[in-house]
Amino acid sequence: MQLFTNSQFGPSPFGAPPGSAIASLLPAPIGAKWLVVDYAIVSSEVPGGWLGTRFNDYFEISIDCGPQGPPNPIPAYVATSGSINELGPNAFDSKGATYCYRLSMEIEKVKGKTCQVGISVADAIDHDLHTAVCAKAYYV
Image 1: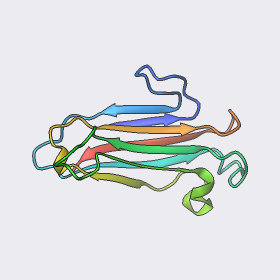
Image 2: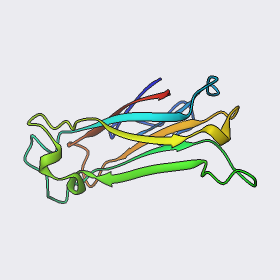
Image 3: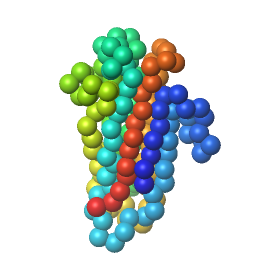
Image 4: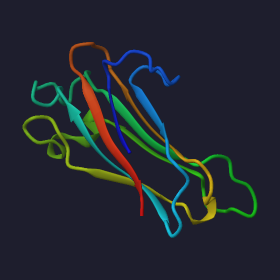
């Protein structure tokens, strides 16, 4: 499943906040051990020369497989977040794109649950310099 969001989107028709996308995945197929999200970030702050300034867009990527209780000790939620400035200039090519990053969660103990993948981008200060997250979620 592919997801895309950027900081200039309006409210989502699915109830997600502006700049966000949420996708529910089908339950994991038999034999799957991991839910994986590969993602890349693209920002117009970088080629525009604004990296390292107050124009510092933020992003968040998460996997949520619902509440867990005993006897399931494996967390049912993982996330990563950051900002364009935190990634730094070496993370981007000349057009403002990163290489792919990966977020994953072991799903052995959450079999049969419907998991959600969420991505969000927050535009800092301006409405001219935009950041986008492109993501692909899958089971392995």
